[in-house]
Length: 633
Image 1 (cartoon, rainbow, N blue to C red):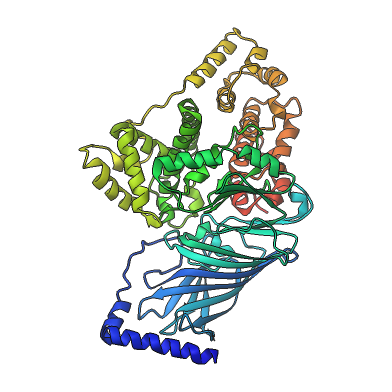
Image 2: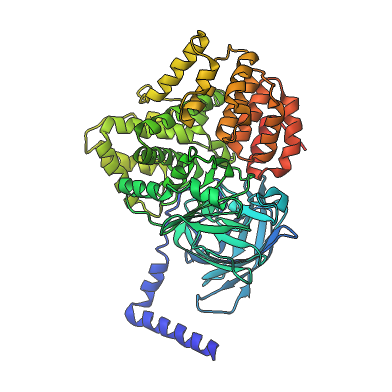
């Protein structure tokens, strides 16, 4: 009876189409599938022939085997003559592929497929044969131990040490390692998911999430807004939820949840500041989950659910700039997305600019200026690290044949910010804010290339206001143009004056450590310890300031870097550095310290520690440190 009803419904639809317009026009409508997607050298997908628009994911998480098994079903659109659809797949076992020729047809028919071997960076081209009227494609698969996006953690690697944990990290092109997918940021899609996990654990995704554990370990998710594949994210663990406001909240392991809720209590203030700047938050809910310490980034802006490192839990909200950054991605990155990874600066440069505007609104201009000056220091260090590859200091990159991770440097973040800040200085803040608000509104839930951005910038800001600006130099040339805006901080001037007094023996170390400084001032102070100072200077400083035993991970990173540069190894510094590197997986932090060890004649020590720490790192961090240290298993 069900089949008869489906046939009758389908017949009625066809009859209705026949009655409303001639048959030849129906064919014509199908062939209006136009070439609207940019070439993405980091994906095997050919979306101008056939493209996935919606994903139904049904998976089981197996902590014993440390794999995910299940089915990825796609609603597709294609040209009338398209015979194949291409998906990205890396380190996956594809068991079978079936298709439906109607969205209301429950009968799946097997179709042929071919896994065409690609390369170590991009994985494989999963090519699926499409019968003429295919509407849905179902890919049955399982992950393997080579799946880079997944990190299965033992209970000993968690905060509570009672239950295992799993999280995914899809940026940039790692979603293809846990879901066969058209893995290009321009190919936005909606998704539903059914995820089965052990019934003592909770699953959350970049979607509408549960607030309590289910009784049977089955969770259902919906993401109704179209997002880029790298933003599909999953975490599974013994976690609990605490609301911060009607639309914000936090997830964490039970032992951390109170600290996390206290640390992030200003999230709603940041949300209101962001909306006042650039328009309505378009994702309904904004939550944060604090993951185990092996998470490779400070944060990841997965829609509705930011993934965050525990290294930002300082106890005094001093590192919550990261939350402002990930929140800002809800506009720049998630709402308006770089079309390809060569355009990555459009995500991060805009987000750093937005982040600092949020921090200025919530905590004041002095605070924002300190962040900008520290960011400029990071940019200068990044420029130095890239001095042998000047093309990598351009905003618009050419990463063909390379991993997109090569473009995830301070250039995208801080040069991108400096471009926008310089532009603001040129046109005025009022015009800049109006332009950006309209930019986010006009391009909401779309992707954009650098070239399209430049066209929009000229048409909507520069030409109407008769402003001459060296946009192409900023974007397409190496280095930093001379018209860069200069940002200063009065609070940092106080720090530099203190350092001068220290150099001239006009102030005691005890008095330096007694200064009522913000965390950013302390960071600035440590970074600017004169290179001419001896290990004895640092030992005296450490005796009073106790930087080696700090619980603030940011201070620890910059302090350990300085101890290595100054060959200070007292107060158990060496042991503390090893403990830090084996218990923190944040790529920025650990790569900074490993690089300092390598550059200061301690490569052998770095390799010894890394060999011990490496099993605890996510594949993203492993890839970076392997290359940095020349590590070969």
